[in-house]
Length: 388
Image (tube, rainbow, N blue to C red; front, side):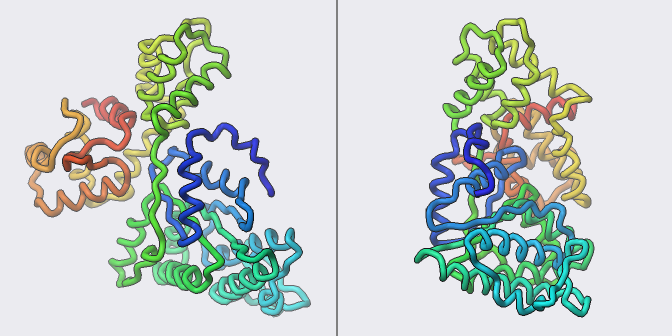
């Protein structure tokens, strides 16, 4: 096992989610999607470091992978490395690359004649070899590939090699994961994969590459877990606090129970001053107003410009209206009235963009069918940033 479990001791409150995820993996591959900074990467790294009996696994961050050939080479290398530790080889890939030695140049596998190894053939042979190798291990052995930031991979391939190649990568992954029952995939993404699919569908793609996977969403921590983590961070940093349980609960609520933001806020709290909930809230507001903050919350506005270039004004009107409202959540009719005061908008266009904003985790729809910000800290920052 490559990563010591104690390296992930700070990942708290995810035990039930991880247990449910392993239970789901017995039956299906999974796509994990949620807002950035929620902790998706940490969750799958912890899962990779603490594989249950009968599982072998490989983890890769795909954000820096730009071609189908690079991706296929990475899958092969990860498989060969993991299975070599189990004294298992990859027979078909050895034949494909040639005993004289195919090579790797700039992340791409080369055949003995110097030509790039066909990426589809590399993926098919690698998956076949993994299944064969697993058969030599304990009965029921399985392999899971943890692939982080898959939407970036597909966007990179579409940009570098064209949308047709990105479509083919989608399709072969679906083919292989459906064909091989002892292999599971866990894909993650902060940028919703639905945006990549919408772009591909616009160019004639008709596939549904995720229909064989279950969608899972970690969400923020439960309030009690977030408060416990906040209190441990206050103690770890040696901050003064007469009522640490109250301060921790207030801090967790202020940052929507997200561990990343708890750590960021604790790092900003003053030393030598006894903490109170009001001191913590004031420090949070200073951080949200700061033009030099390293929290990178501007990402949420940049992303609107990138993902909705043609409909940016509608999206901003929706988000501005909900953020500025005195109501905690707004109905469709209330949002339509606010947006219509700024511009003319068709009801179906408005519904479509509300759905996309929910899929992107800017918004969430509650049991009464009203819309609110998914995270209250993002609403708070949006109000400040947009001068609402």
